[in-house]
Image (cartoon, rainbow, N blue to C red; front, side):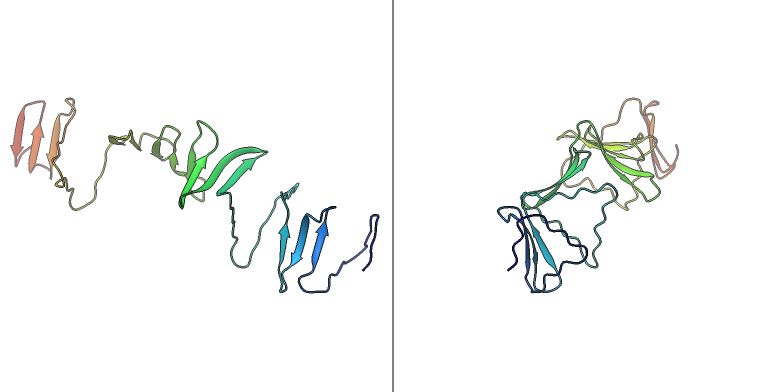
Length: 193
């Protein structure tokens, strides 16, 4: 073989002609680029950093596979961790890495669809009046105007259930003018409001 003890400058191509050829770097040959014997290559080293002053594009004609044996894929902005995707006993965990910040889902046009907020509420339409929350015991569905249930049947029969209304509620109407409960006037009406 050819040994060069100083820097070598190559003005054009460097061809390694054998299948499974290895390009070694470092005094201990601890970074390698290995031809896989077909049309691919494997980079091996600890760590491996790619530093681009512009956009970095990963373009594959098939899939892009991220295989992290440490169970975490971490997203950073200028060195600050922003988010993390983790494996926890085969559960997929999506975690915000910045305290008091939310996870936001948007449409293509940039309009917010929903938000997993730091206050453990699921908001709809950019943290407006509609949200769903739970404290581990009670489930709260909050709406600015109304909660619309479009199911054919609302079934509360699996256990004993109470329906409790705030004292400020004046009336409940079932199927307009068929059955009404008017709390402020202490009356129940059938066939009339």
